[in-house]
Image (cartoon, rainbow, N blue to C red; front, side):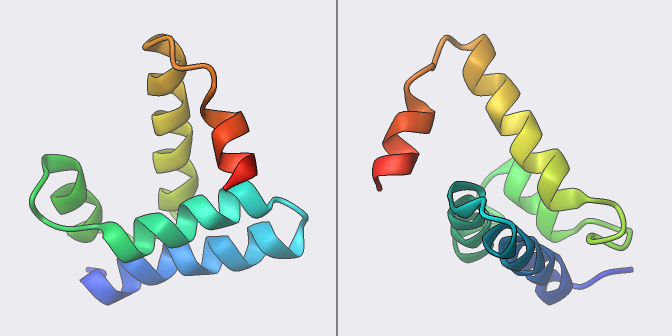
Length: 86
C-alpha cells in the first residue's frame, strides 16, 4: 500500500515530466494538487489513501483528466486561458 507521501510524490513526479516536456500548465496543476490535497474532501481522501502504486497507476493523469472532463461538462471553458496566464 502506498503512503500519503508517495501519493503526493506521484504528482511531483508528474510535474517534472510535464515541465521537461513543455507542458508547464499541467506541471503547475500537478504541483498545486500535491501541495493542496487534504482529507477534508472525499476526493482528497481517496487520492491520499490510494491503495496501489500511484505513479504506475497514472493517478495524477487520471485525476487531472477527470477534472478537465468535469470542467468541460459543467460549461467551464475559460479555465485553460486563466491557467496559461497565471
